[in-house]
Image (cartoon, rainbow, N blue to C red; front, side):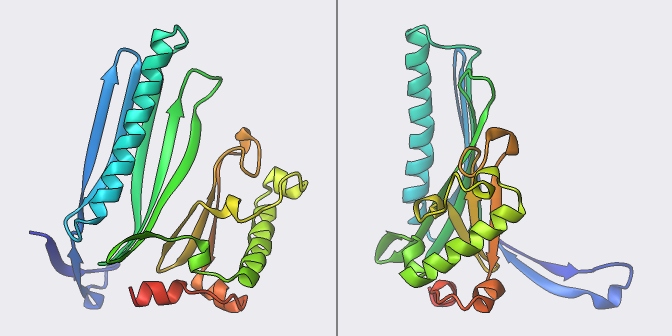
Length: 228
């Protein structure tokens, strides 16, 4: 069954129990390839409805795995393989409706260097007859983008992102390309080396719907979520 119903109880007072209903929208697929010292594992959702989402997700996820495997094979053949190569890539659902989708892919990879690497990619799409990629300009006009950049810069300074603090890196639209959206708002992701050295790790900033309203940022996010 794809629907789970029941009663949710919080604490010892069962009189506060509330009914709930959960609908299963996807199964998770784990695809693994192993050859000699190259190992890749990719986890991604397979949607039961709408199945058209799977066209882009499977293509992207499996191509990522294939590319890493081929590059590892080439390194092995050329004698450039040191300590083995590994990839663990996982796609997490942040928002999914009948026509709107937002996924975050977190990649942990090691190719023989001094340390493993962490990076991100996103899948943000809207179904309008065909799948259309969503970007920040679908949510914000140019004037609001500038204000959003100022807000994110301040938030990253509060998190002590070294290269934002010393202004050796200035945020721009390109650095804001890694984002997901949900009922909470917009989440922005900055992998190691984006706004600080590797030792600081990745950074993440949530810009809530309330924050967007309080800042007076004109945006189309609410309309996309509520009227897909």
